Each structure stands twice: as C-alpha cells, then as structure tokens.
Length: 108
Picture 1 (cartoon, rainbow, N blue to C red):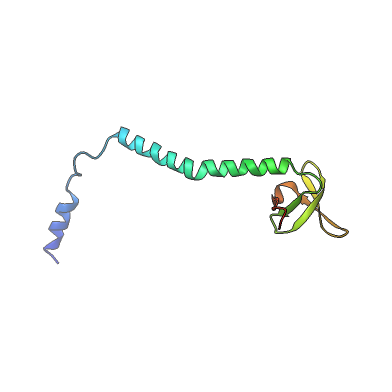
Picture 2: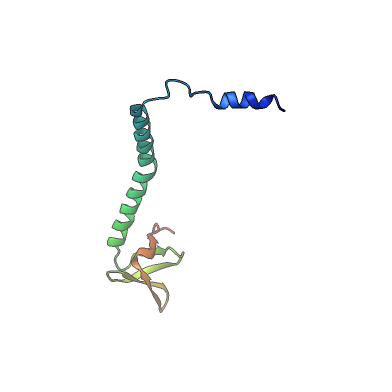
C-alpha cells in the first residue's frame, strides 16, 4: 500500500496530452449539436404548436372537439377566450379555448 502512493502522485501530475482540439473545432461541434436538436426537437414542436393555434382560431359551431381533460363535445359557442361545448342533451360547459386539445375525425 505504501509503494502505490508515489505511482498515483506521478500519474496525477502528468501533463495533458498534446493536440487537445482547437476553439474552432469545439465551436463547429456545438453548432452541429444545436442543429441536430433544432431539427429533431424544436422545429417539430413549433410546427405542432402552430397547427394547434390555427385549429383553435378556426373553431366554429358544430365542430366536434376533445378537451385536454378528455371530454368529448360539440362546440355551440365561441368567444375570444372561452368555448361553450355541449357534452350531452341540455348540458353545456364553458371551456378555456386553450384547453381544447383536438378535433377528432368525424368517424369516431
């Protein structure tokens, strides 16, 4: 045990290897990583967010919708921030417009 300490100290004091890479190489790698993240994560999320905003903007009476809470219903009134949804006969609820998750296909 006593003989291993000098070996550990000598290896810890060894200078780093030469040719550690330049700033330009590091910058290019960072830009490449950012580009991959942009095209795999950021761009698809923006596209989906834009489609959702367009769907909310185009809501009209008679559209079938699903809320983010999972309630299916039919739009019977649209205001600036509130959508009135009929979920059963003579049952209407007011839902925040941003809580409308989707318009399901007509065959569901």
